[in-house]
Length: 422
Ligand SMILES: *[C@@H]1O[C@H](CO)[C@@H](O)[C@H](O)[C@H]1NC(C)=O
Ligand SMILES: *[C@@H]1O[C@H](CO)[C@@H](O)[C@H](O)[C@H]1NC(C)=O
Image 1 (tube, helix red, strand yellow):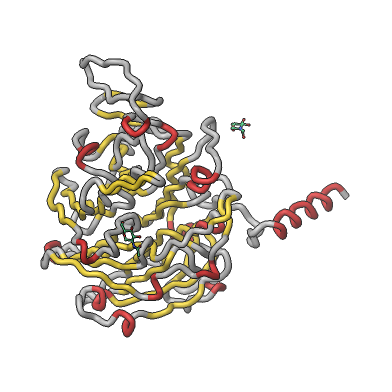
Image 2 (cartoon, helix red, strand yellow):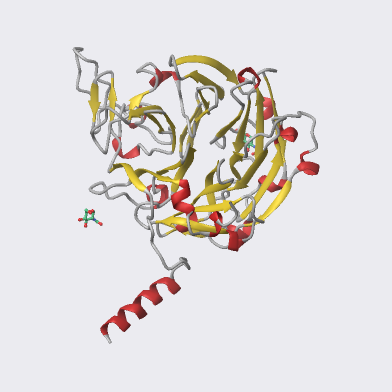
């Protein structure tokens, strides 16, 4: 009788909520880092609680109480949003969307950090705290370079300030040296808007390093910006498939109703064929559809995008997703599925239908708003930040709010429809 009651309660819980998958499987994911709040180590000085001013080792520190917009470190405002993994470095970005963010582009060392909540260090060094304004989701390319967009925007609500022109910045990861700063020209922005430039995808192979292309989403103004390294030129595509789907709004994350209008959010590339041709898969955040286009279209400044794009299919209810990435061996896309606190898969050999897109890991505590997702070799890595709680409610700073997890892709998809097609 008692167990029947529990079963009934469980059923009611699931029928009542949006979660139609009766599981909460963290599955084969492993926690790498967990932070209650973010702290920094800058030039050997630790910042682990609010600090009005930057401290200098051996320097004189005057106690002052600067205005909010001039405070060096307001800990609660530091929300990690993007990340990337390169050997033993995990890059962590903290876009400047509030005051008191000392450094936007940072890293932690996987080998030397014994803590599961390591302090962030500015990349490549402490000078970067003034060299970069605001960076979202950086990416490492096949030529050991780190690419990012610095939006140049201080994005404090009701007080956006464009501190610098937006730039594409590229670093050599072997020598930690800046290789390129390219100002994104006004004519590829829509009305000067830079707040939507939240990711970059690099199209290059190890044999064509000087002929790289970068694809930058503009989720605020529904565009896709293409940059050619060889031509030192950039152009913009606009298309209705970049726009959010009004029928896909109002999904729930962290008990908050998400009514954002975020358009094109993520571009994931298939492997190149022998001629360098690959498929670029993309979707708006607020959408349950997946689209694709050949990179040959993107690389052609004068291409007719509308003639080249394709609707791959509909992933199904509660499939709204942020970042996604392509796993070569299994030809599978993995998605940061924010509407179900899950990582979702779709094997691109299969037709895209709701039956062929399924969660492979789900946790209503540890995967609440996957803000970034990246496949590195055989593993998928995710950064989780529960950002709806920050925007609409309040973090409980006595428990972990931000996470980095990783898991083996083939283990994750084993036994699901995504492994059936391999
Ligand atoms: C264009 O930008 C200006 C200044 O930032 C703003 O006042 C205006 O509303 C914008 N126009 C549109 C159509 O968004
Ligand atoms: C905050 O988290 C702690 C530790 O998990 C818990 O004991 C406490 O009840 C939480 N506070 C609130 C207000 O939820």
